[in-house]
Each structure stands twice: as structure tokens, then as C-alpha cells.
Length: 165
Image (cartoon, rainbow, N blue to C red; front, side, top):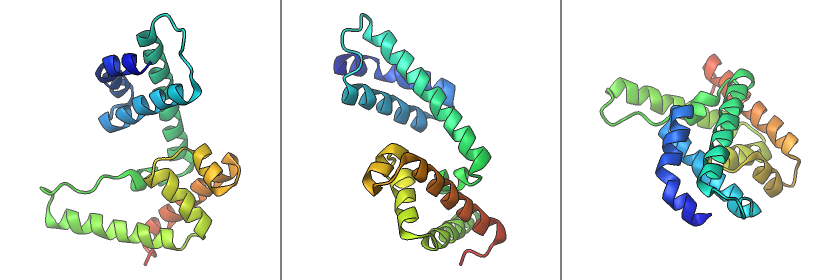
């Protein structure tokens, strides 16, 4: 499977990017797909490992898109946590705005209970799955889902009200 992954990595990323519209998210999906297959030993004995990898990546990309859509619908502040920093060529006003927004988000996060902060950090910054966060915190994946939803809603509410200070 490692050999097939190495051989098909670029076309797999290209394929995922076509679905997701973002190269870095596509790379994450391809890497996640490979890690899932590696951890679970899935795919051994498959006749065409390349086709199998493409199918797994496609399914995972679709799942990720659905999850992002759901988070945007119900979480409301998905975009603020995933915003990339302003490019160096941006105007001073844009850099100040991004810096202020980041400060407001950090202030809002600091108001959260410790376990909720940790869940947000593990999931959004370290990139762990909700299941992985649940294992680390010793709670159910459902509780992690609710903690993340509530944390993001809190951040969004603070940004919208301008009271995050």
C-alpha cells in the first residue's frame, strides 16, 4: 500500500483538490486516507491498489466537504478559525484587522472552560479527529462534537458582538 501511495500521491491530491477546491485540504485528505488504511490494515489483497486509493480518497473528500458544510450551517464560525494569516503584501490596515480579529478570537477562547479549550486546540490546531480528541480527553465523540460546536458558537458570538476583549 505504501508503494501505491507513493506512486499515486500527486494524482490523488489533484483528484481531491478538484473536489475540495483547496490544495492543502486535499493534501490532508490524501494523508488521512493513507493513515486510515495503514492503521486498519485495509486494502491488503486488493487487486488494483491505485483504484482503491482513489476511491477511498474520493469518499473521504466528500465526507470532509459534508462535514465542513454541516459545521458552517450549525457552527457558524468555521471560517474564522481556519483563516490563513494575511499575506505579507497586504496593506497595513488589513494586517491590523487580521491581528485584531486573532486577538478577539484568542480572548474568546480564553473564556471557555479548560476542557473545551483543549478539545478546540486538539481538533483545530493539532488536526486530530473528534474520535482522537475524545480518546485523549476521556469523553465520548458526541460530547466532543458538542464542545466544538459550542466553542465555535461562543467565538462567533464574541466576534459578532465585538465584546471579545
